[in-house]
Image (cartoon, rainbow over all chains, first blue to last red; front, side, top):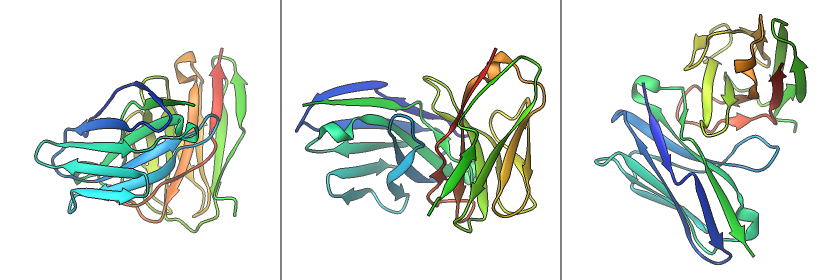
Length: 113
Length: 113
């Protein structure tokens, strides 16, 4: 099955700085890569996703890049704000794991004012 | 719009007791999922239902059973709870079984003593 590794496990930045979270996956047939944000006491919520037919996708301060050859994808948050503080999860799906998201271990992002 | 609703929000069980976690969605989604979340391990899929009338095992199904009661409801049952099942449980739903956004409930925090 699919295996997703996520780094770093914790990330601390100053407000206004950029934050980057990286994930690698094992199944070359995976073709859908979402990112979820989880605030304290809540369920995860999708913030951005990318499919394997594109290399980069942006939505305001958030961007995701995908390198299918190397089997890794990254989340970039620019101009971070305190409300970006949360746990972020990457995930992968497709191929042998179609219909079943495999999540990374999560990154606790703290943005200091 | 309630989205995905889970009950209960908190539960304490003694080892060997049984209980059912309830989940309902009001978005007319076909697919539903049960995940568990443990520190440092991300979210792991327990069971999923691609469509009404079908269920399949995920990554960690041992000790659990599920029922897709109808299109709206998907329950998770612990027949004989064990301390290793102490976790936060999330139900999710999506329009179809693959490559689409998953919507999560607020979670059930279960402690088995």
